[in-house]
Image 1 (spheres, rainbow, N blue to C red):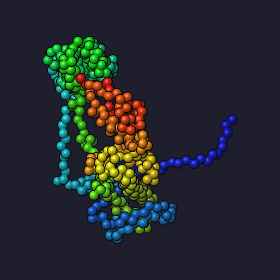
Image 2: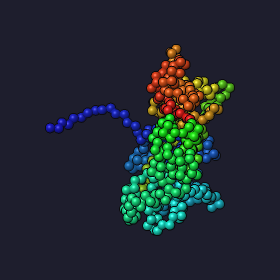
Image 3: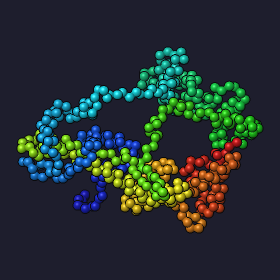
Image 4: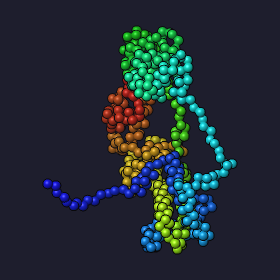
Length: 499
């Protein structure tokens, strides 16, 4: 038998406003402008501060509704307005305009401040994609309409790197169900071989091995090229793992000839279709969130001005609220409109406060990072970086660790020595033989120097690197060296070997 009982529990739950604030805090400067534009489009009560109104005070205050009106739901906002502006506002006129346009917005040129003379069309740059480039070459094949559709399906099945990733049976099914074209694996294979002759060399291959061999077959016939094809065809696994001694022994080649063959292979393009990939320069361009300047040995911090947009609550919407207060006739329709206006005013006020809170949190957190790593911001020397974790900054700022993490995520600071991601300044501590704590970044830097200066014919193993670091006084294990090497995107010794 089920028992019913009452339980009282204490739960911590974030409000929707707090969740939105956390999301706003995580947005980098590069995306903040877009987020503000979205809010401006969704909320007509929010607008940019005009230069000639910078000295005006926004005295709109949020509060609970007081007992004005018959139903006791009149607004209690305090709004300072001039008599002229109040007289110009007509709530009934606002409602009539709402009926005329179901969207409630005026999309005319006057609303946005642009006339016919200011209309400009931004020219769009025409780019030829990889698939378009290959499709243009289909005309060189004498294909009927049916086989042309099959070839188009094959080309469309290639990825941006030029590889045919889809199985033959899947392509057959796609043609049967999507275009009502019956075909088989043999016909697909024949057309694939023909497309493989297109430019750029190596496209429409199933594997990397096949891609490289296709490129070699388009080179002038010579013994080094034939040897290269033989290596990829019979010893691809050994080649990928750089077991050069084993391959050289099987092919019976001297050092010089074998080196020439390997050089031919490593000059091939493993991603033939990537040359047509259009990169968005705007996305790759880094907009710093902070600027740090060295003023006679004293680092000074400033926030990117794009993080501090001049926003304000719309005067027109506040005037409507005041006009409703002064109106003696308050019908149900007007009250519904006022509720809508109040919601927009509340949302605009909250968004402005959230932007200001974001500015304060960013500056407060970055100031703590700058104070903690003051020596680095003065010298620019990576060895001056101290061990620092999120908890250290959280304690200095009295913020939660998750808040510090959101600030450090995808944020950049520009210094005299370069532009750095905030996560760059965070690292764990490693203890030396003398008991001194040093940053793991310092150990990684020394490890990278060891590997850069090694003999590439006989690269250093992880054991050798561990011994070299221990000789310098760093108490570190071999598995830790392997972990740091992987974090630096450096391969194992065998894969770093060169002829």
